[in-house]
Every structure is written in C-alpha cells, then in structure tokens.
Image (cartoon, rainbow, N blue to C red; front, side):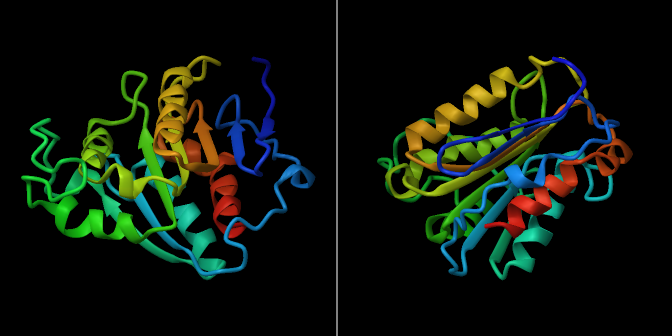
Length: 221
C-alpha cells in the first residue's frame, strides 16, 4: 500500500475508511461520502459496545467510539454504551440452555443491561483495539453471547471500528474478514467500517483523520 488515503463505498452507502498511518494529514474526499440517510430521517436506537481495557482518556478505540457518539447525538439519535471490559461478563459455555432464544445461564451485565438494549436497537456499533489480529477478548465475549438471541438479533444495522499499532496493509485482514462474515451470518446491513492502521497510542489517533471519519459516520446516519 502506498502512503495515501483511499475510501471505499459499498453499494448501499456504507463507509470503509483506511489510512496508511495516523500521522498522515490527508482527508477523505468529502464528495465521496454517502448522501443516503440510513435512518431515513427517524430517530435511531444505537448501542455502542467498546472492547478496550484501557481508560476513556487512554484508549484509541474508545476515542473513535466517542467521536462517533458525538456525531450520532448531533443527528438526534439515542445512544446506549456498554464498556465490555469493565462490566461483569461471562463467556458462552456452549450449554444450549438458552435454545438460541432464551435467557442465558449467566444473569450478568450482558443479560441485565446489554441484551435488552441490543434487542430493541436499530444499529449496533463495535469498537475494539486489534489484539493478535483479532478483536479484544472482552468484545469477543459479547459476540459469543449473541448465541442466546441469535434469531432476534438478525436483520440489524452495524458499524465496526478498530485501531492497531501495526501499519502494514494486511494488518486488519483477519479481523475485517471476521466482521464481514458475522454481518453475513447475522443478516446485518453494514453501515460503516473504520480500520485505523498505525494508531498505537492516543495522541496519534487524536491527530489522525479517523476521529473525523467516525464523527461523520455518526452525523450522517
């Protein structure tokens, strides 16, 4: 990959933004941003799930989530946030007690706080750091717990944002494939992806174009 931006827009108007490094000062072409209003002018219920174990002031992926939330709130949408790393959660045991549409055996924060909000949400937003070329373990726990309500979580809209220290062009290949496979399996409509290559520390992502991109995705819903 050469050191420049490129913007890919899917047929339904989703944004997928890649920058070759957080120090690059080159914005995406505003004329290429989708004009389609995904919410169709209606107030959306949005659930934002962060998977970083770092604090709000230190996390690079939480920074993207914060900027997205600012944009979405400016457009009048309702936001519920869930910090997967700092809530009581348990991984799926594969016991099938839920029958794919019932209460999980764990009556934890996922069951009490998150799942009810996810079930009524129009849009699910995920933000994670890249750990060993996948999402964080904290976020993966949430994804695995989809099992208890798989069918009822089908057909929603989704957005995925991730940050990584690495800057190679293949950095996000595995995670991007994982997310897009999840979208296909869950029959979701992908409404945006941000893959923040080269953002290993907070000041770097704050100086990059990724924050503006996250804000615009939220504001353009």
